[in-house]
Image 1 (cartoon, chains in turn green, red):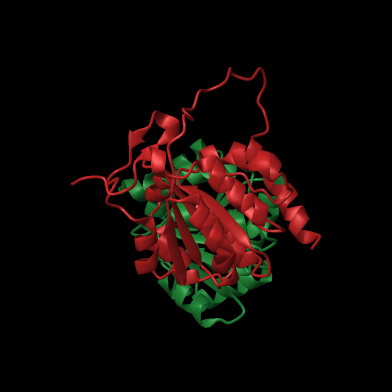
Image 2 (cartoon, chains in turn cyan, orange; image 1 turned 120 degrees about the vertical axis):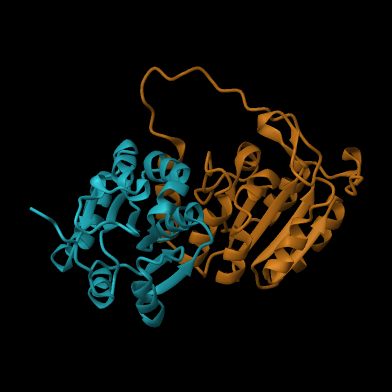
Length: 170
Length: 204
């Protein structure tokens, strides 16, 4: 069967983030989730914290958690590769329950990510597996409930959980 | 181009700088990076010391997260020059977030101390205070003399941040030597440490 990943509306994702108790969105600009970033920036109930690198974003999330906040790290798949050391040092060794939303930019919607021709998409899940970070694919509006579940999982396991955004948000 | 920083014998020592900071510390969360960690904890033991190990320049943004979570609590990061260079963009991130409770100390000894004292790039020309000022920090200062630092620190702390203070320090011999491998998998120090700091802040 051919799978066709569907876009999720930024408003739906924002609502799910608010329902999950997310207070801060730490982000590096991401083409794939740009409509969500715009919605977050426009919503006064959510704080938007911009970082210049995903390594910084990981550390900011950890610090926010120390201070009692509930953040999410919103990045693009290229940024996942860029922040491996802090995911290891803070996520794995530090046991910080950081939830990441990772945009799979340019993913072929008709294929599973690991079958994608592009290495950036194809290797994202294997990389997370190597880092022992659980991951879940948000491949349409029916998967939005994964956001709240990811926080429960991250806190239960004491470590990061990644949500892969399969199609560009609208 | 010659090194324009004072000769090492005319610079303050790291330990003297830490003494000055420890005397001022009250209830601040302090994030000491790399070789400052042990000497700082020995001087200023607290359940608000947030340990930073192996994040390759992540101390400043780890501290930034705490500062943004708790704008009512002072947050100090004791950073290294080589560490900050690894994530120099953090200066713009901090300046943009602009937490008034944020003090960024940079120990500028000019070398990567733990890896064998190799010089940092552009040593003698680079100014971290200058970089922070141009990035948009609210306040910056630069000292090589510990008495001058001690004399001005109260005034600096009275101003809103983010503030960066660059301290030109003499290198120490803090070459990293790994210990023997553990007999069983330990809980890493960072994982043991941060819940203590979280709980201390929660009890405020």
